[in-house]
Structures are given as C-alpha cells and as structure tokens.
Length: 372
Image (cartoon, rainbow, N blue to C red; front, side, top):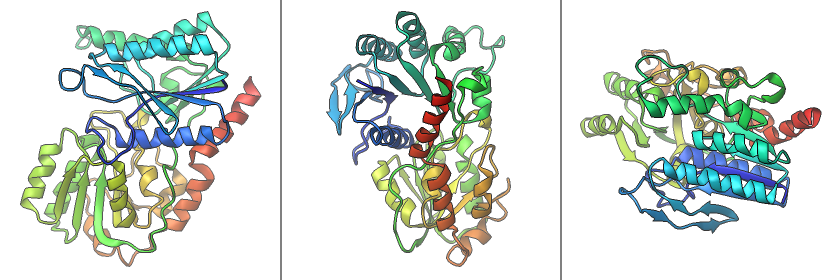
C-alpha cells in the first residue's frame, strides 16, 4: 500500500442529506481523483456526514462507492470523531502506507496522529486544511467552556501531528506555527469538469452556506432595494434560511431552493449569466478561510461578481466584476450581463495553469522531494 486519503463527506447524489457539505464533497472528490491519477494504490477512508443521533440513525452502515470507503459510523455526538480517529490510527499503524493525505482535521485526529508519531515514523502525513474552527486565543469568556479549551489546545498539536501542511492561506499556516520548510499554502482548485455550455440564460445564482460571512443578506437587501429585474436563484442552507425564504416570499425575482445536491446546483451555475461569490469577516476570520465555491464559478461562462475579500488571487482580479460594501454597482452589472465580457476563457486558462489539484500535487511532490 502506497497512499491513503482521509476525509469526511457524503457521496454526491441527487438525494444528498442536508447535513452534507456540497462544496467539501466536491473538493475531496477532486483531490481523490488527482491522487488516483498518479498512483494505483490509493485507499480512501472517509467519515460520513450524518446528523447526530437521535436526529439520525444510531449506527450508519459502511459502504464502498467508486473505490472510496465510507466507513461505518457509531453516530454519537463527538464520540463519532473519536472512533473515526482511532480507526485511522490503527489502520495506519498496521498497514504503514508511504504517504497519507488528510483533508482537514479534528481534536481527536490531532491527538491520534500525535501518538502515531511515537508508534511509527514510516508515514509522511500531509494535512490539507481549508478552514479553522477552533479559537484563535483563549479569553475569560471561553475559559469556562471545557470543549473550547480542549479544542484550543488540541489545535496547538497540529504542527506536531502532521509532517507537512497545505493551508488554504499563508496566515493559517503561520497561525498553526508550521515553519516554511513544512508549509505549502494553496488556495484551492477547480472541482469537476470544465463545462462547455456555449451560452448562458438570463438569471443569477448564489450558491453556498446561507451565512452572514457569505454576504447573502447584503445581496438580498440590494436585490430588493435596487429593484433588480432578473431572477436570483438561492441554493444552500444555514442560519439565514428564514431570511432567504422571507425575501423570496416578497419578491418574485428571488427564488429560494434550499439545500440541493451539487448535481442540481451545477446545472444552474453553468448556465447562469451571473454567479456570485462573496466573503466577509462576519463570524469568521477571512484570513483563515477562502470560499471554495470561487473555483466553481470561475470556470463557467457567466460573469463572476465578488466583493474584494482577502486572499483573492490578484491574477484573477481583471477578469472579475466587483461590488463595494453598498452593492451600488450591482444593478448596472446585472442589467448589462449579456453585453459585458465574461472573461471565461481567461479565467479557465488561469485555473488550469495554477489552480487545479493535479497542479498542486505535482508542485507538492517537488516540494517534498527537496525536503525528504
């Protein structure tokens, strides 16, 4: 056995559960495909994303789909992550693969991989980390939350639990205290096939977590305030579900779909004349996150409209349309969307050259080759 991938997602299907992360599933599928293209000995160990019992099954059966092992799950609150981490620890100790790729991590995984470092040093453990949910620092308010304190100190173990880190931003790598010799920042890459739709239809799409950090409430307010005469399709779920439903009930140009499988969402994104991608430091720290859907929308035919969020690649800026905090340019961009240049070909060329997972893995191999 040569290589192992460790992650957490549900199979992409029309009947995907709402507890699924559509974006996370697409990214992990793409990473698995990229690794599989360079080896014939990849084993994938994946924890299924299911709502905790009693809201879902107590025991979730394992399954193998397209060569990906979705492990059985004892679905008990935080215990399911502990059981998964212990399984991965035992598996890696017994089979001793050469390289192990982790997509994100958890407190229990950090502890188990830290222990594995004492039991076996034969594996190269590479952490691909796309976000950070632990506290940046402890304060008096959080000291009374035992779970937050444990999470904070387990996060400190990350640099000792993994050999190399591929953080989504340089700032995240620095926060985790990985030295430059073990850190290879990568914003992310394209997911799926490059679409070949020759034309677009006259509607706009917002797809992603319905949270304030994605700017949905700003977009809905501007769409209504500016009386934009185009259909806006909203896909996703989150704490702004009720807000989206309210706007949809009162504005015939706003259509709320809720959570849908990426298979359905992609059909809209690929034919939309405008796709939105926003990111704000509202409940999260932008420096530690990057919207993965950015790489979904840039390869499609329609215009890409963003705010100037942190870490947005400079080489894409001239091929994107921007709105300010008041969304004053929104109406003008949308009304002229059929006439403005989309820059799709330029965006796709950039993505193929610099922002794909096969390109990242090739660069990583060179990075590791120098340092091993």
